[in-house]
Amino acid sequence: MTQRADAARAWLLHRRNYRESSLLLDLFTREHGRVALVCRGAKAGRGGGSGQLQLFRPLRISWTRRGELGSLTQCESDGRALDLPGERLWCGFYLNELLLRLLAREDPHPEMFDVYDRSVRVLASRAHAGSALRRFEWKLLEHLGYGFDPTRTALGGAVDPARHYRWRSGLGVEEVAASESAAVPGPALLALAQTQDGPALNQSRRLLGDALAEHIPGGPLKSALILRSLRRYHEAQTDKSQG
Image (cartoon, rainbow, N blue to C red):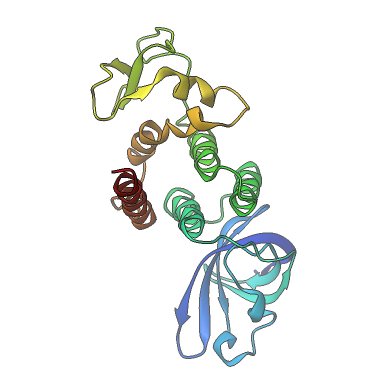
């Protein structure tokens, strides 16, 4: 039985060469979830709309499928490609890699599609990139059923703005001394329960990363390692300029 989809909203998460003239695509669609499609003849310029197949460009795609792997029949731009310069580009790669690792194919996630759509547009708007990543991580944990109450510890105590916390694998949020290397301040956790973004929200980076790491197969994300390296480099440059 042949399955068809027409003009589905989509974002390209990954592409690679396939055979001599084609591309193998991993796309995130709103109504169908992640789909694997072949764009035949793309490298020879014969694929329908293959020139629009860019990362961080909103798309409308059509395809047919008889087995596990479908064939892209049409691809149109659904807006301008987003400009993600420098470190923001790696932030976008990080979002893509999270979806590739954590979402199964052919499993619709319309709410998560909307969160991704909003997050990459925030990255392109020059707003605070860290806040966009933290919101995305938090929503992804919730969506996959791994969410937690950021206002309470695993033992049921209230998160105190004057204290520090970390994520303990298999347990959840626990209070720790401020000197702990993985400690995050209470306001960073409480910010997750609020809708307003800001510097406090980004301080939850380590805790959310540890919470996600429990569920990511295949070891650390490559994009996350590169972002850490870039962050350390910028911090070193800042220290040098102030020294």
